Structure formats: structure tokens, C-alpha cells
Image (cartoon, rainbow, N blue to C red):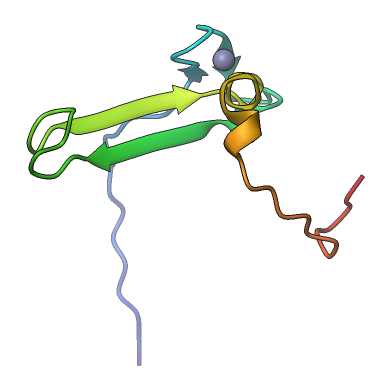
Length: 86
Ligand SMILES: [Zn+2]
């Protein structure tokens, strides 16, 4: 089998930064610590939702705000086999 290729110019978007919807902290995508710890909520509400039938809910939250707002409700499982765990 021979694979055929062609060069293409791809137009798209590149993420530059993410802003926490709660505290408005902006984290640079290139080299910024903590960007991988953002939590992205994306949910489509169903019928009879308090958010409106079929509406979509989005929220980007930094780890600091997640902890501050929801720590008492989070179920945190410790993973002992996580590589390079501190
Ligand atoms: Zn935040």
C-alpha cells in the first residue's frame, strides 16, 4: 500500500489564553502554569431545565475558584500511580 499525501493550508483558531469566568484571571496558553487545571463546563439543558429548554451552559473555571466555590462538594480520589506525583 502506498500512501498519497498533499500539502494543505489549514485555517483555524489557536488558543492564546483562557479567562476564568469567576475571578477573570487570564492564563496564557503558551507556558502558563495552571491552564491544564482549568475546568470547562459545557452542558446542554434538557426540557424543564431551570436554565431554559435546550439552552447550552458554559463556564470556564480556574482551579483556585473551583476549590473556593465547590471544595466541600468535590469527591477527590487520590491516584497513587500518577507519574511524578508530589
Ligand atoms: Zn478563577
